[in-house]
Length: 255
Image (cartoon, rainbow, N blue to C red):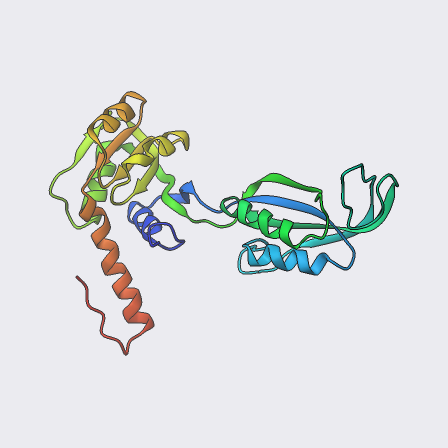
């Protein structure tokens, strides 16, 4: 969606504010590392199943993985049906350690695909959380103003950059000196706690519930709601300009 993507509405609004070091307020695409041990001769099949389930994507590169050979050991116990070896006898098998990354939201799908493609009855695999992200996308944006300023000045400047707004609801201290500013157009009220956790001192959005606004103010976060349509409509004109530039032969109609 346009409010999540890189170069989308969130970054456009952040640009109007002039904030720096911009990053998502509620990131998507958090990565995990999946490591699975596969017998030689079956690695490509397992890897392909993972890739088709959304694994192995780093930036604009797909099918990313690392593979290292080694020896796996196991002893099938009574009641098992080993793919390799016999019950009661320890086996030493040439295996490949297959590593790849998966967006956190795709882990369940990827693991199911991996288990279906893997020949073993019991599959040895590990999942590790990672600190790096898949990309700068997610709801809202947060960053720093070049210098601290009173919250009311930032709010007024933002309202002007939007082309003027009919009204502004402010919760918290509008006179507070702020530098860390978060923004999310439209109905972004539910993200105020994300803004607080991310270190924002001022949160600008389209609308927020009365009680949420009061709670945010009591928590030390200044919140300004400038209108749902008012915080989204300017981006429509921005997109229209991009389309006209990219496709000059087309008529672009704004509504």
